Amino acid sequence: MITGIVKAVCVSQKKGTEKQNVDRVHVKPRHGIVGDAHAGDWHRQVSLLSYDKVKAFNEKGANVDHGAFGENLVVEGIDFRRLPVGSLFLAGTAVLQMTQIGKECHSHCAIFKRMGACIMPHEGVFAQVDKEGDICVGDQMTVVLPKPDRPFSAAVVTVSDKAARGQRVDESGPAAKAVLETAGFQVVETLVVPDEPELLKTQLKRLADGRQVDLVVTSGGTGFSRRDLTPEATMAVSDRNAPGIAEYMRSRSMEITSRAMLSRGVSVIRKSTLIINLPGSPRAVEESLGFLLDSLPHGLEILRGTGGECARGKEDGSEGEGS
Image (cartoon, rainbow, N blue to C red; front, side, top):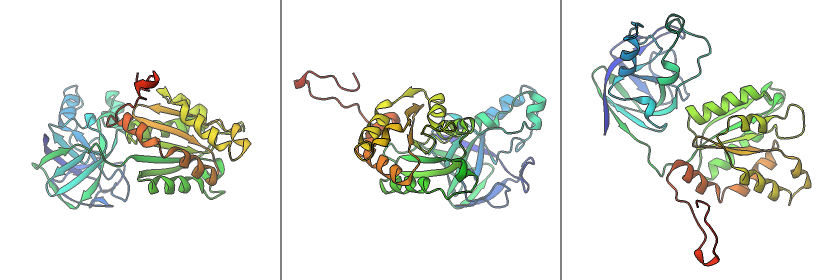
């Protein structure tokens, strides 16, 4: 069992300011910490840092107080960075669920400018409130690791200049979300981005590394237009190629229309996340996901480490996929 002790409970009434230790807070689902500027119905309601990481940073000369990094909870004895997203934190009478590891630092804080480093972007984690309650300094925090058979998590990214500018309604993203949720996936995030490769790469990295979703599907940007660069951005962030998925989608789609041969979508793996490029139209999104849903869970189980490799019988002399 992993346990720790809450050393500080910090809030700030205004974003962009250092948080102050208030010793006790009340937390609510779909809101976060009552009285904190970062409260809201989103996945980063509560930020947490390891007391041991802060102590080590201060020994280098930082000399910062609790809350200086923008963290809400400082906990001794738990290395949050080593825990998987989906872990539960039981503290006081409340329950939090870890939703993201680290964050991108858009503008360097005063600590970074003074020390040349800041631990929050790399060591900090975020959580949402699952059960209302109070958390106080001195409370024990207990970690409950995610269940192996939990539903698969997914994120949907629509890549479209016009949709990002609000010039057309995104129908492909909601179509993908509906299909995935019907199949039992937990869609934790949907977003629309323009056809900008660097921005797409940033989001794919965040979803795979920070949010640790099992599956990311993109829609759009897979054609022949000069700005259709979704496959290139996807390949740039990949650790391993998984070409069979994209090849199968194209093959099945060509049974419907020969124009499917013009789709350049790819499928890759980054860490433990599978990323699949889908076409841009709602109908093609629904069809493409429909082709994959029978076999997709098996691959995701293997990525998660809860599924075994399958192999055909020895009677035909063939080798299994894991050989």
